[in-house]
Amino acid sequence: MNKLNIKMLHFLILTGFSMAIFAQDATVTVNQPEAINKLLEFKKDTRTVETFRIQIYSGDSSFRAKKVKSEFREKYGEWPTEMVFNTPNYKIWVGNFRSRLEADRALLRIKKNYINAFIFKPKKD
Image 1 (tube, rainbow, N blue to C red):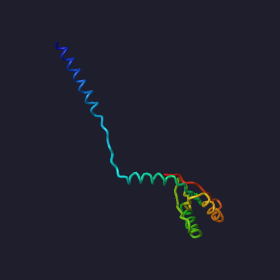
Image 2: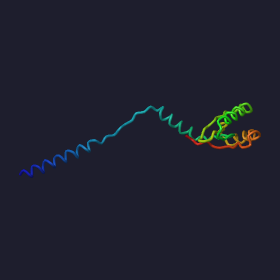
Image 3: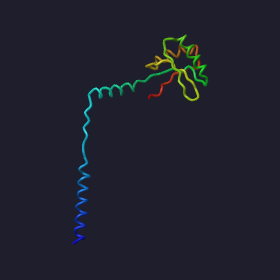
Image 4: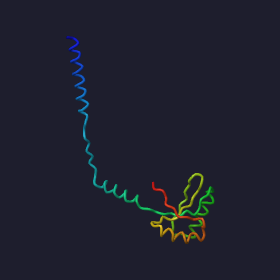
């Protein structure tokens, strides 16, 4: 009789635990403002815009890169310039062109003074 009570007790405990495990299932409802969905759509659209830039200098001298950048600004003030450091080189990037045609037109003007300049698409973040 004692073994029967122990087996019955084990059965009841296991049944109770299995019921408790199934009782943990729940659903979560997240209420978020509609503005968040609009913002996510906007962000998704901005990542698809392709831009082109022109690189006019690449070298290991920061002094030379700064000099090239300032000279470029004096000659061509209409395009923004940026000095980027990619180990071990400093690079001078010019412009932020929305189309390849716009970048090609700028490159024709820039190549007169910077013969090694070229167009590239920057990597997206």
